[in-house]
Length: 332
Figure 1 (cartoon, one colour):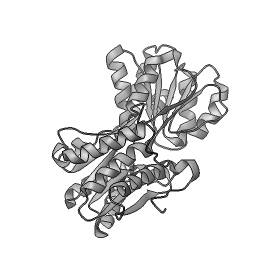
Figure 2 (cartoon, helix red, strand yellow):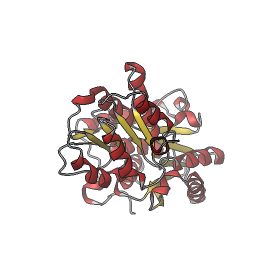
Figure 3 (cartoon, helix red, strand yellow):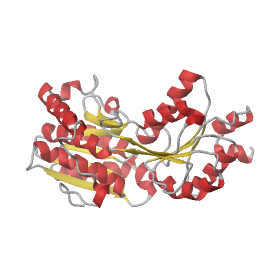
Figure 4 (cartoon, helix red, strand yellow):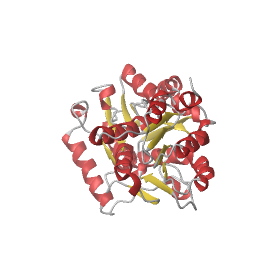
């Protein structure tokens, strides 16, 4: 097996050996893998949609360690890939190190922040807005008046989810209790379903009857345990309603798939800079389908849709934790 096969994996190496065009895009999945049923898988779905519609090919790698971040960026840039799309805030520093060495390559960070680089496109989402909507739904569905939030790695981005969620809960039930736990402080927190299960049971013991998981692959354990224990859960990023039909109240959709699809479709025309994906841009939303229809009453949906409209038109403002590292509705 060649070094290229060892590093990039069979799929990417095959694309390269087959003579990938210089403009072929590349996608770097964060730790947790592309089939995490959440953030990474949403990115994969967007890439596959582009490939299926256009017949195009893209290079890819599923990171297995922190050390691979910078290596993957350099290998793809040297292979002529453009743009090079990355998922997760942890790619910010590696992109900052690599981008100046490849000025003709556009690097894309989804969820990261790379200032002062002329060849970097940053994609940001209004996670607090989407989380507010599912928080409202959780607050209305809860019979105990206590709901939970389980995050992955304890970073400002995930606190942004938690804060928006708590604001939504409090909007429909000011007396509600919101329990918040983070899985850990290292990247392994994104892929620890056992810990997710343990935290879910702990929150249930404190009275939570709806739990929102914003924890990547860890969330699979949260949703499974919630279903097993007879409470409701809220999924994240991808539509996770089908994982446990009739048990997942809704999912906070973060349209990473749309972002990746749009970037790949633009190809060489991708422009560096910043792109915000808000509720108004349909960058975030909540999921409704046949798997949760029986759980959401017409009244619940009407109230959430009214709140959605008021956020879009600016009459309702949802506090963004990352704007000042504070949350009026939740203590961390």
